[in-house]
Length: 355
Ligand SMILES: NC(=O)c1ccc[n+]([C@@H]2O[C@H](COP(=O)([O-])OP(=O)(O)OC[C@H]3O[C@@H](n4cnc5c(N)ncnc54)[C@H](O)[C@@H]3O)[C@@H](O)[C@H]2O)c1
Image 1 (cartoon, helix red, strand yellow):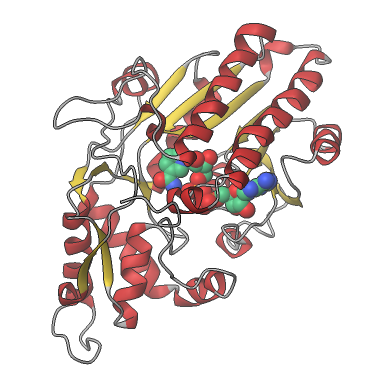
Image 2 (spheres, rainbow, N blue to C red; image 1 turned 180 degrees about the horizontal axis):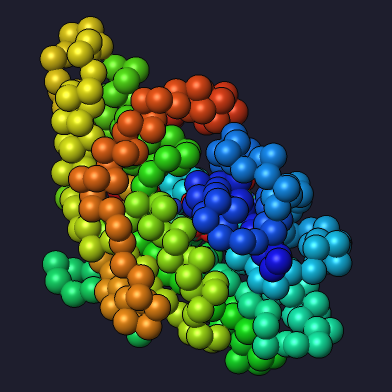
């Protein structure tokens, strides 16, 4: 049985990857996660007692802990998802993003290189770096990001992810470390921390709170259901060509305001009793100061992963968002538990003074 180390496995996408690896494939999985505010082991309840699953709490910036991880659990692959991931937080405090996303990635790369050099069969190992389409910056009204798009990150978050992508690529070019990189569009689905748009809107609507939409809500994102992303990641980890980048996207371009209105409509259909003073959830929508440096449009050309590896998304936005809302309605306890930490739904990302 092959062993995969997943960093950031207690987060939104990492937990979906681990559920896929354990429930649908035959791997031993080591989840290495610091459990920051964004990490929650409840997201892994369905696999927690599985004999092939193991959790190790640790920080990817901690050289010794990472080195010991490779000694204790010699991996066939590492899937690196641990990161600080919220753009608004990166605007308020970039240091943690630089530390985790850049320094942490370099610590992992060096530990992986040292481990890989000692392997008898060096071709079998792979380092899979999970990244974002935000490294490419913003699009105008037309066009798509593909693997040749130039890097032009605009936020501290995307700049830190871009830096980590470059490090991973350089470790391949310089040392020959077998790496694959994926850059994906915006994900949504179960177990996403309720500071991100879709779970924030669901939670605020249920509480009868305003539904904040940045600027005029005209920014366009290409939404992908998280289980489709997890399946793509497992496929790239297993079959991706070494040294290659694969873009992953959902072919679901939507303006933020359309997304918010869709969530409101689906909640209206599911909830008979609305909070006091409103008859439709969309009455709670309010437009707030835009995010500084807010990218206008992201959209992915996922042709390469489709042609080379046969991947395409299974969910449409309509089917995925319905599943997502049903999950949040059925798992309010999960939301209560993740929110009883530091974050209480306050507006982040304006500290820099921006617009
Ligand atoms: N969410 C998206 O839409 C999206 C889209 C494309 C790519 N990505 C990338 O996918 C990855 C996962 O994103 P997510 O949305 O699941 O993030 P998340 O914020 O939900 O989870 C991040 C996880 O990393 C852990 N972590 C943070 N710092 C750590 C450290 N120093 N050491 C060990 N663990 C640490 C956290 O505890 C948490 O469990 C990130 O690399 C992100 O850049 C996210």
